Amino acid sequence: MRGCASDTEGSEDAIDDLQAVGDALEVANLNVKDVSPDEEYIVLENTADEPVDLSGFELRDREGGQVDGGLSPFSFPDEFVLEPGETARITTGEGDSTETELYWGYNVNIWRGDGDVVRLVDANDQVVLEHAYGDIDLEESTAILWYEPMVRRSQWRRASRSRRMPRISSRKRPNPTTRRTH
Image (cartoon, rainbow, N blue to C red; front, top):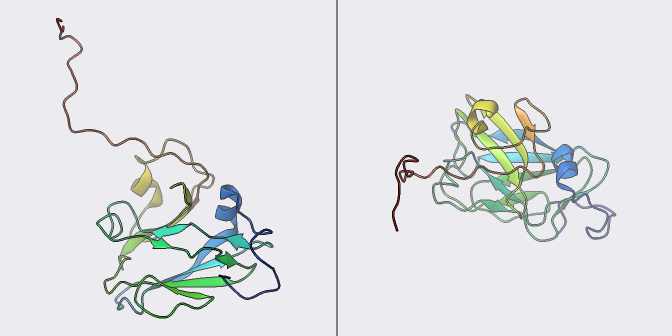
């Protein structure tokens, strides 16, 4: 499937390096406040001079959001290539997907109207692009989730090969002064 119609054949010339994908894409538009799921959407734009292959990538909301609360992330179709200067609109509701308009298929809103984080994640669960909007501060929202500093620090956050910190267990740790006998 092609993201946007063009003369490029297949995805062999498309950008697929994580850093380059993150640098090539922007959240160009969004419609999330006080709308129905059929009107709720995120628009990604390829600002690079080369096509971007989004096969296997997923679109998610912030940690603890609707997607983490049990809803599935949006998965880009196989061989979905976004051509230079073109956009892809991902609508939360139901509809018939085209080359530039994709549908998540939910009848509930995914994005918080007052603020959320749009995350683009590759097939290996690596965050490639993050965009915070509304009342969300990206630095505070993810400060405890990442080991490595991000490539850019602002409300736009692009990452390559970021690693998540392990979750802290609620189990008690053994007291280091306690001796165990065998």
